[in-house]
Length: 142
Image (cartoon, rainbow, N blue to C red; front, side, top):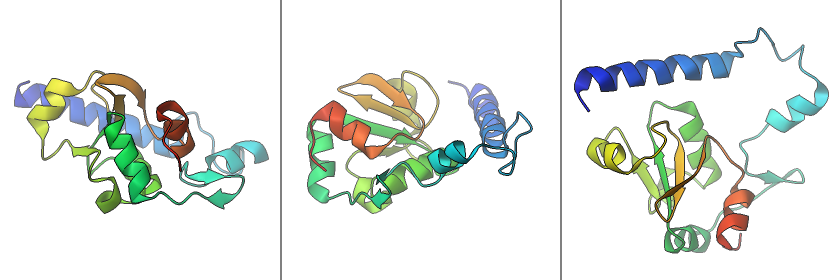
């Protein structure tokens, strides 16, 4: 990919992220329903109101199951996903930083948008997902 195309893609992602974060439909927290506020609170790493602890064994199991998370340091959704996996140091065995490994991301990513989660080289999901979903999909125990 040329630098110009990459710059355009990055700009589009940043703008889309800004719309996502600010709520491009004109909603604010006071207008949202109570259920939606509860659903959106937290980082996708909670179950029944309890914080799920992610262990090194869980991350190792995800790695063995072929899970790869592609992300970028400037991406708020990437940061949220990585935090739900225990932080950058914990997620390191399965995390690819696309600002550092640009070529790898260009070659391996299917969707082209971060965060992208692949399992065994196939696109699983994009965006922030509950850790429990990864556990269910891979059979890895939390």
